[in-house]
Length: 629
Image (tube, rainbow, N blue to C red):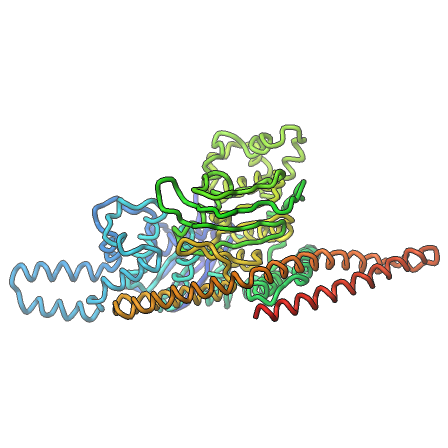
């Protein structure tokens, strides 16, 4: 049990917690939430004993083992596997004692120590450590590499694996998914669901919190409030509380109406395909959570692209990769039209980011042709964009480099939507956090009115409020977008279709994210089977290869039908928008005045014609959908 009793905490002159009390019982899985700077990480430091409260007390049962992710990984000659094993301190101690006892020839002590080793499941430790590393994306060759051979992001994965290896009573995880790809996030989620101890989790990944948390500890106004249920339940509870205030209620209704608008628009083109249905459900759910974000400081929208050429871009037999190295993706054919919302799936290193760099023009294709429309304007967001910001300059200066003719007040108003207000607008960005710099990079991208967005992990470093604002803004974006993200909520609500990058190919993936999760679990189970049975592994590998070939043939046969289906969906979307406009005209009382008799007649005739077109297209859509099933 973790107990806070009338606890107050200051960092410098800022009061983070003021006489707050909280009890977290054994086995709770608690998501710790709150705006940046409210004290989430400081709470972890309190639990770890790195901070002392200014008043009140924090109490923990004696003898508890607390695991957390180290922020630094020493550059040593220890192999990745040995480094992870160090997370189990009792195992390390026992192994050293066994070595010492064996050197001294103390047989009775050796026997006793081996019994203790069996009691802590020490004989399977190497296998368990290897499974942790595999789940987090390491291959067999990397297990024996020294820690100094890994880059920063991979070292953080090593630290995470080491924390998971610890047989702890309490596990503290602060943004554990930041350095992971989608495959590793899904694996980690499955692992943490089985964790028997008390979990305290700071995360800006809504799906991750929803899946794992039994409670939410929300920090607001120097108090910590414990809510029962996952993050979605917390949002709805908080929304109800906010709605009791009249001003907040009015804001809620506007926000809900805004989201309902694009739910209706997307509903016109939602297909029977699982991804279409999955996105429609996710959008509908956003109506419920919108009200919990009315007090967010972030409100912005993508400006309408100046031109929307069709197609925006076409890849013809393109091979993607780096010079003098084997191609990561071979002979890719892809056409991107305005309105396409594509998500890229695939393991780390498969080539997702490399494909985006190639489309952006930052990397030349190995072969093939990339045909870009004359009026194509790409908005590219990746982590290296943050490094290109001028640390010695201000947010206002960065925006003025894009539009030197704009009025300063207009630029200030625009930056305000990204919570750059007051002195923040005119101060150098050097001291800004990673999240604040990511917000500025997004603001610069939004201002340039792109018609094709290339987003490579756009939510890294962004908090939940900013992620929600970005999601809402992207729903209204009229151009096309290609997204790589480990944020499943973003993928569910934005993407109409997925492309799976694997085994040197980039091909359409017909399922939704739940299907992709099942595919990964199946592959992991098969990998475990293959490792214990070489013959079975050979046969199953051949079977999988044959199945992939058959699936590819089937997709190729269905391509003309799918292209026709997409064309119908795009036309239905436009007709649905026109239908909404006519309904709005017919809802105006003045149209029924005798002076507007001809206008009413024309509008009704136009509505009737439009309904017939919609009906015919829907029938065609159903016929093609049934043929594809």
